[in-house]
Image 1 (cartoon, rainbow, N blue to C red):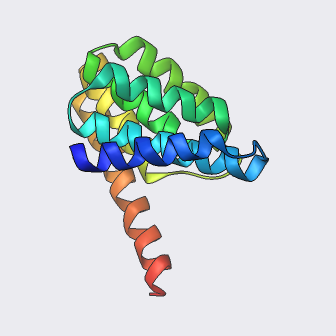
Image 2: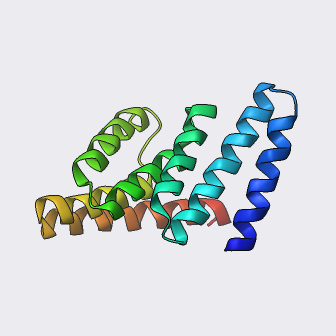
Image 3: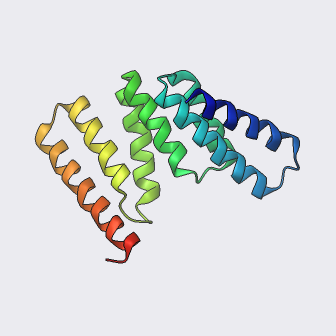
Length: 141
């Protein structure tokens, strides 16, 4: 993971030196999101959160970065802030449709915050069904 983190940081430094067109900013947001994900996997939550926030600054529609912020808050035990971010993301995604990742994060927060096992299980089942549907659509089944 350290090798990947170093490669992403090097790519970010190259992007910072290039022109600031919208396409470059979107690409930089993707790199910040990937860096945040790698740092999250390494357990470096403060730097991961910072990287996810930078990604959102570059591209406010980067849903993966928003998911990353929520995951960091959950791991930190900051369930109230995670729930606030999740509510905001639910409102934004209401027009797009349901997401397996969103349903999964909702189930995790429901279980930990409200100690609602039945509600969490329902959300987890919903997440599974959405994931299976997306997989079938991706493979043309």
